[in-house]
Length: 201
Ligand code: 3AM
Image (cartoon, rainbow, N blue to C red; front, side, top):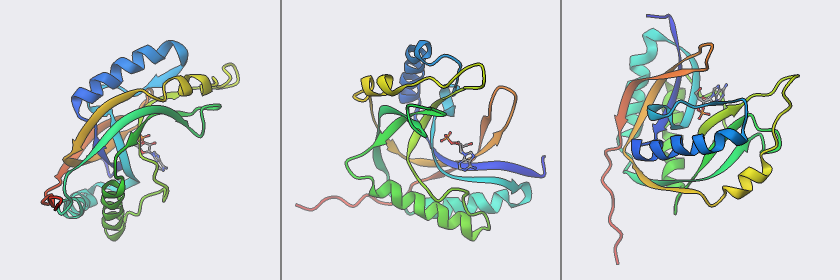
C-alpha cells in the first residue's frame, strides 16, 4: 500500500443518470475537440471536498469520521441539469453538468458536516469554495491548440435535464493520477440514515 492516498469525498451519480451523461458526452464530443472526457460509469460524481494526500494509516479514521458526519443526514433529491464550464465557457478548463434542487440547503448542510469532520481529523479541504457540479470532461489547450469558445454550446444546452435522484450515500475516493488522467476507486461508502421529517399540513 502507498504511504499516502490522494483523497476526495463525493456523492456518486447513480447509473441511470450516468448512462445519460455518457450519451451526452458522445453528442458533445464533436463540438469540444481535444477534450479529455470523464470515464462513464462510476466515475461521475459531485465532489464535496478534496483533501489531497492523506497518509494511508489515517484513512480508516477519516472514513469513520465521514460516516459519523453523514449518518444523521436524511436523504434528499438533486437534479442534474444544464451545461457550463470553469473558469467560464469562453476559456473552458472543466466542462460540467449543473446540479439543482427545489432546496439546496440539505446539500450545503451535508457538505458542511463533512468539511468539519475532515478538518477535525486533521485534513481540512483544499478549497473553501463549493459550486456543486458533475465534471464531464476537461478541454485541453496548449500553444498549438487555442481554447475552444463554448459560449454558444453552453447556451444551447442550458435546458438539458437528466431527472432527479435521491442522495443515499457519500463515498470517500482514492484518486490515482496517470498519463490518461485520474482514475478513481471507492475507499468507503457512508449512508445517509436520518429519518425524513414529513411535512405537516
Ligand atoms: O471531478 P471534479 O471536478 O468534481 O477537480 C478535482 C475533482 O473534482 C478536484 O477533486 C476531484 C478529484 O480530483 N480537485 C483536484 N485538485 C483539487 C484542489 N487542489 C480539487 N479541488 C480543489 N482543490
